[in-house]
Length: 279
Image (cartoon, rainbow, N blue to C red; front, side, top):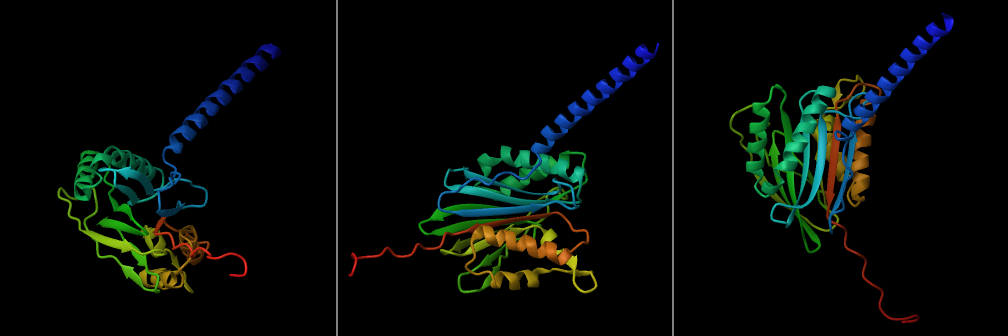
């Protein structure tokens, strides 16, 4: 009787362990599609990204970014950065749906307005009441310079770090996606000279709360001032620096999801040495 009881309990434990193992495997497989992607290399264009989900242990959230090389007509690459309302697993699931929809709309990537309209139709047809703000950046190399077509849908405006220390705030604006039947947007064209950068970011950066009393936003102006001090830094360093600033400002307090993409025109190579030894 003791042997039969032990065998029954051991069998139950083994079945539970196997079920748990299967559930972990399924969860990991599903989560893999929601994690931030590896940034592909773009010919003659520097791209760097950083992501930090809200909460200490979560790896996924409502912010996202994607980089698609040579889409549409084949001349432009497409960079997308977005922010789904809310945070946590539900926001992450909708993020995955949005990323899949945008991937299916890549043949239309040259027409930013049409991409936003089709995405808006998909979200309005769904059951979720959440919405998304995002910015689309069509990226094209032109010799030593990089041309950007920036379109905003209710998202914080990208900032341009010029090589003379100026920081330009772009004027592209529009409505969030998934709220209204009609979508309005505007597109701005920006040309990056060698060494200049464009910063795309989610509101988790500028709305990080900190300061002496812990209730002050990091804010647009503080971000602009920090970017003025970052002239000439590598593109990857700029993305890392902005994320670090937001996290340090928030300290141990809760913060929203943070997504950052920096796009740069490579700096000019130093002139080659001429003449031989003793010239």
